[in-house]
Image 1: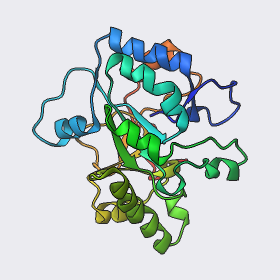
Image 2 (image 1 turned 60 degrees about the vertical axis):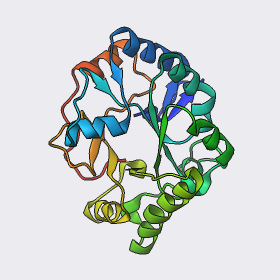
Image 3 (image 1 turned 30 degrees about the vertical axis):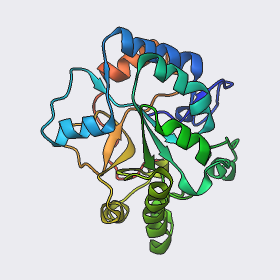
Length: 239
């Protein structure tokens, strides 16, 4: 799980929101050199829950929020190795800034616009929904929760001209009611911010991920890939 990739000063908080592009390039080179199979989310879920075999050391790369710095910094590195990635878009803020960061006292960053997303569609990417406005879904009304989950899917499908199958919970915030709404909206699967490896025993609508943080050296990256498989939290929500 990544968010922003670029050149950043060392953050004092929310370190999993940032990955310096030099470290990102080193991490992708590591995956390539050690023979990791960087596969699509489609392939991974078919392998875990369907009848498709998974390659040894399979990894899915996900990027939350759809920042412009994904296009400017991460994409070239991914293309160098032919790696697939899944990007979760905040459909009501395309081409604008990440207002939820500003509301939290952080610096808002620009999100990819519609033209950029169309440009990237021809590449090795999957796009998913990250709601309309990136709220904490357990803290809004049932009406807003439904609007955020249903309309973001419909809007992105209009933009992309294809089915949007995957959802990602903003801020990692979800409960049983949120999960039920995601199922009702017709998504195939949903991803959380719970740390850990995804397995066939997981609920397909509450899949865990491993967060790559600003401070992760290659040693830390190695540890998360090879050793840190146990779920970090058993709670239903995580910020």
